[in-house]
Length: 546
View (cartoon, rainbow, N blue to C red):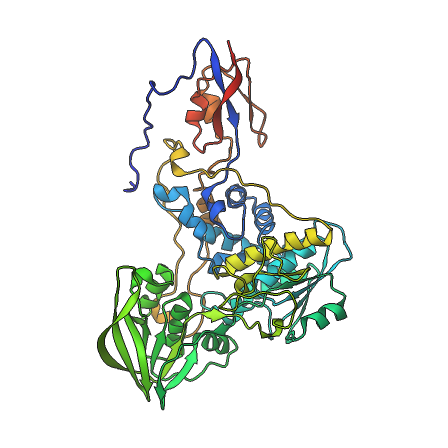
């Protein structure tokens, strides 16, 4: 039995509200509200919708519902940090639905079955140039192509995918699955030109006859910090380490490697160093674990693979293979400050993982573009820059950085670009209120353990970059999808129909829901109190009904 919530019995205080009586003052209404998973999803997926289809075994429809918002489920099912699961109401009872695992299952099934995308609008004759074939660029290209526009991507690298290919190790993001998601977008009619670095944006736009531009060059440069070096050991940044390793030209690191930084890239760099032969890998980070930018599970997995982490430590000098490090402490505001306590570490290589930034030098001569102090490109609410018709998104604009956030940017930008090309503006609809856990009525539910994804044994991981975590089987994926509470949307459980004492709930047939017979209904609210997912709300009548 779960230790999170043991008592589902609702408390009833009849002195606080009146339901049935000689005069009816309220009526039940069926509503569709926003589930917390969807509210937390940076890509804006209809998670509740595609989980419902998946648990019914309608996998192709589930994939189509999912990809209406996000064209790369095989990728996101692996690399997204799934904030949706952090919001899942089921987490208050036993464990959140493993949304990412079901998403990966659908993405992998699409590849096995050869499913393809289709356009949803007629050709417009409008042309859009996209600079960068990372998650934001690919997402924008997909949505624009479906809307009938001609899309061409210019990519500086030798392969599409951006940091999904060169910044995420293959043990987390296998290249074949990434390539399959990209190929499906290309099959929609998107043209990708590789090894083409845009140097003069205005010239490219004019030469191609493009009506709009979307900039999505990502943040592919590592940030640096000034550290005194004297005959230093090999010093390189984490972005280059991961890039060269993905390009199958990894650097020689030696046996002892120190990684400086505390983000997810630092964890990936340390785990990559272990796979490249380092016998001792140490992460040095100036704050404690509670304040590290990396996700907890990333640190856990690094520790499991033998990586050591020195919290509250900073590098002050590098001399040959010796690193002088100083012990730090946190002040009242949680900021690190030096203590004066120093010691020496030895390393054959030092990897700097201090964040990433965009290479926006070629944009400085474009009139109307503005940049923040740290080099990010400023955009407005429509994701347009200060230059008309030039939009931007992904890691190069001010926001948090992740694959899923960039993918969401691409979709939003595509909708604004589409409106711009049609001579209008796009205004997203206001979302319905979010269904919190306290709004559910769950006595009919029992514990159902979350599906576990098997993983490679530690000894098998160090031999290469084979994917660590396995996917779910069809049976496991269907069962996991069925753990969804369907928060805020009716799924025809018949609780209201069975509970109504006046037989005022009328069934319309499978998939068509119910209607309220207002002649029979007394407004007693029994139906709403029995609805497990808060798809019924009692609303006052404009005129009380006898």
